[in-house]
Image 1 (cartoon, rainbow, N blue to C red):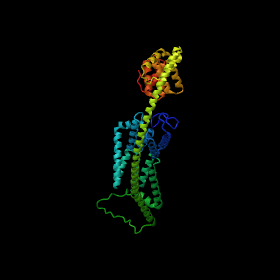
Image 2 (cartoon, rainbow, N blue to C red):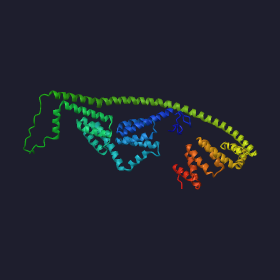
Image 3 (tube, helix red, strand yellow):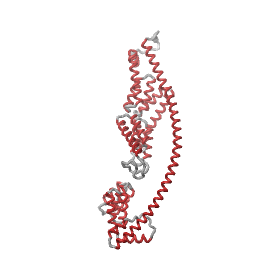
Image 4 (cartoon, rainbow, N blue to C red):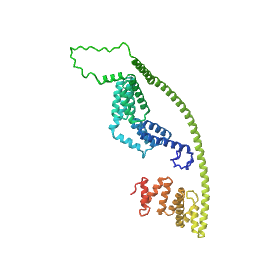
Length: 470
């Protein structure tokens, strides 16, 4: 897990070790996002696609950089026939993570098959046409278009649901049941599909209980009872059969009452309820707009405060840098005097150690100091290189990589052909998450020190970091 403020790798602490930000809440949010992602994987494996889509949307709402959750949501949408939403998720995924993103493979695989892309586009267009026909009340045309859609994309759950609804509206409950069962094979736990199936089953069972004989008779007639009729010539006279009854039976009266109740419920469900839902949705949208306006005002105030805070931090850093520079100069003068004193006493090891303590990054602005430091460095180069290398290895052992980098650089400044110091310097940079400098030193060993015992190791590490090595 990386810090949202500076990008540094986080530890078990509630504060970032690099920038000091409080990341306790951020960690909980990321963990909750990953929990939702794991739940989405389980639901997707069990073909509960609607449930998987719901928890995955929650996952990316908490952490928009959860690339695995976003890619899986795209796959779930694609499996449900929602190709436009699937493409949208994959495109957003590639924008957030341009490299090493599986979504690139999904998009390229679809783009390479132009016929598949055209077929998916036609499917969406036909579904929209069917939806328009359904709204206009032209159910027959809508059913024809939806059958074409499902022939091209059998997994399109919304098309199956709309076709089932139209069959129910026209009293074709057996066809509606077959259609919605096919949809449930794709998405086993879709709440809307389960609701439709339950309503269809309830209606058919009630119809069977109230009028079993009439139901059997209607089925017999639908199968066709005119197969054995003789061919009629133009001279034949057809006398229609009088099936009119003066009064209805009690069972038929009850059936008509039930049908009236169902039609009234359907009227409420398809006309009254959508109007109320639309009204509530408008109220919610107005509340969201008001909330967003208030948040915009607060964000502006927070932005001003943050700018003032950043300005104060920069001024404080300048003061610290100035103070640090003065202290660094004083320490360097003390160390050079100590090195000269030990050198005069012919205590070359202590002289080299004192000289090694000098921070070369501090600008002394003194030609006398630079001249003495240069002469002492030349005379004690071997001692300095050895002492700096030992100090660097000690720092590596305690995982103080910043100090190790400093000491190994001193060693290489003195002994420019010390391939061992270069090798461990590269590893110190890599442990310190500075891959650019790590690659630089691994590649230098691979290119310029081919007889070194570290050559093959450095070559492998340079290739692993993306370099081309001869």
